[in-house]
Length: 382
Image (cartoon, rainbow, N blue to C red; front, side):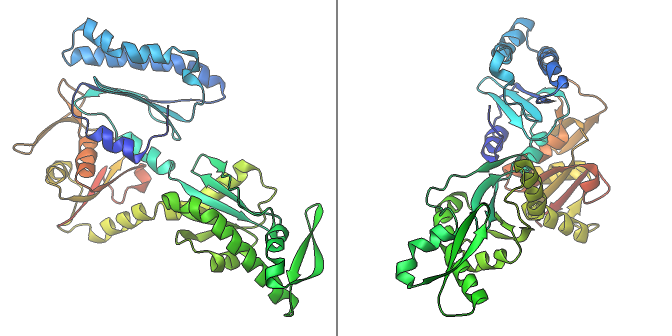
């Protein structure tokens, strides 16, 4: 079971061979409520089996279709490493299970395509960024998401400023001038003939250049944003030393050496969040500025037609809303039903898929984060 990525999404929206079974549910790591998770999943698997029969599959065939995932869910280690949500996608060709950093409303659907719209917030929540914690005593690089913070092992990182500058002492012809207490030991600061403050800054600049060189290969593998964390006066010095273009303008100021990992994770995500969501924020602002004109719409019927024609540039969908019905691409007719009927699909999910297939952007957000007052909002390319 893996995190859900953009690559997974692209593969799943291209899946057209039904029936496609989607099962979503919240999970409860390390809590009493988690003891009920296996029963909740069993009930959803039963619901999916019934839906397969309602879609025309024989009872024995529906049972056989669901058998592999039932067997998998009954294994003792299936529930190891639970996060906040669980998603299962089953078709004749695929059987995928994902642990998610967000809780999902329990749901079982069967259709020609997978119910993927609820997965978009999971991709955003799992957006990767780096945190670089800076101090005289040492530097630590972390890989982070909204829910995780993992140390990155960089073997060539100097232990601290003293170790870094000791490497270049002979080359620079520097003289050990005065000791500086750091932590429980003593760390030397090297300097030459300038003022003490200027020399310390030069030493830090040299130290951070060495750090930059050590971590650059890691950062450049995926070009993820980098958040700097440390005492305020260190941060501009590191910016001056760094060659990495992905350093965020946001910063995490303060001494984080003794912070608990979860405290650092939460603070880092809150600091990085505006940058991670900048594209969505800009798209929402564009919709508001264009609202009421010919380049925007909050009419689901018109949006479905436009998405099918590749006209939708950006789509916002209310995460709490489902609209069941049918869409006929040949004539653009839309029929909406109060409850799912045989042959129906969730039309907002369809709009999301068609937008993404044609290289548009789609966002599934809480009601309060919709750019307009309706449950759907689209900005057109033209």
